[in-house]
Amino acid sequence: MATAITNTVDWKLIWAQRGFRYFFLAMFVSLFGSGMNFAGVSWYILTATPLDREGQRASDRHDFARAFRSVPRRRADRSH
Image 1 (cartoon, rainbow, N blue to C red):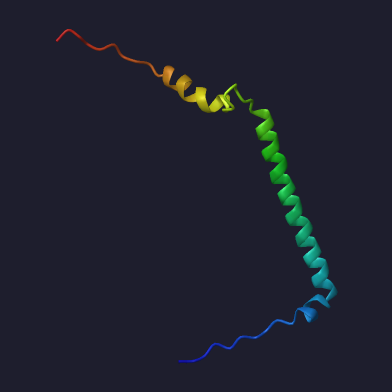
Image 2 (image 1 turned 180 degrees about the vertical axis):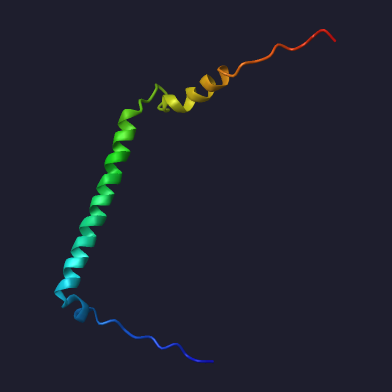
């Protein structure tokens, strides 16, 4: 069975490349911006959805009941 040969990475050599430093900085800024966007959208959704007295979102409790009441029902046929 052949043994796996692993090559070590010389990080000092990689960081010495000016282009890699710019690339790393750009990726870090992009990742930070994506995280801030996620936090902002989440915060907006939480503030735009009101809570009722029990701390539950009003939409969670009432949407199912409202949808269930809107279904038309037939009267049971009792002539048999």
